[in-house]
Length: 443
Image (cartoon, rainbow, N blue to C red; front, side):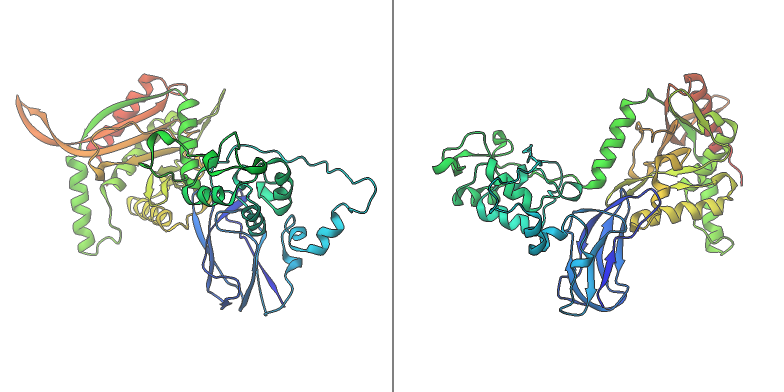
């Protein structure tokens, strides 16, 4: 008996996922536990394993397609079994010629039925074009530039009917123009000079001919689009200001050295880092300045009773900011363990999407010290009120008392805050408290 493969739901707020890569092809034999395909949500990626043995009879979505959760994406079963009953709505009629004939207007009627749907031709959309295999073959065969066709299938997917309608309004390409457009990523200009109004090779234009071939156009990944949108919205919808200060890092470096010795002696089980100690100090400062442990939401603020600490994590797929819930209840070892766990899950792509929501954290720490950055301006993860940037440790001259100066390791701290929610004085005192907690930290 044929069994459908369903797009899993990862988190209650996730409504759609994007197919990453198919590891199996139609006709392949699949064993339970074999990887079928990868998929991603807004910021996390996952891999789906086969739940049963069988042959991969059908695949309903291509790589890059956005698929609603709990939707059938493929079918496993025995060779020759029917799969049409599992086909998602909107593609079943396309795949079943009999159904299409029943739905299509009969040419024998005296007065043909006029379709209410009107094909709208727009500009080339952003991202990967969603088009069914049948529609793509049809478009290439008759020379229709399908990238300018507006799809009527699920989530804007272009189906065969769209190509048929577009063929009546869009100029067709000559074989030479079609081949050149595909090979050189060109598009049709406004005028056509080919026979019968077709688009000729001379009518094709490049994305920007000024730069000749000295560039490569690459589409943004889904995650990069989300990051770009979030960063732009953050700067557009808040009054951000950054204060910079330096903290004497001698105490925190001594603690790090002490914990390293304890780890070697197996007195502790967790490798506690400088960043863990900074986060521990930040949590203490947030207890004294709860106005920084808030969300700014227009005409009101959300004051948190607990500290839900966000940590900026750099991954191959882009920046992620997972939250450690109730971080103020954790010991330094517990905090270090939780920070290490969520960072590892982000890099592996199996982090809980709920922890990546901007609303999940009440305050965020972004540490660029390992990269040697001496000063930077972090961007607030809205609706949070503030974010702390931690910079590298640099030897700087300091008064050691009695007129004696010496070089002391100093850690740069950059606090960006929303001036709509915090006054400059409050922000300065909060940053000073973080500095003092780092300089006097004891565990």
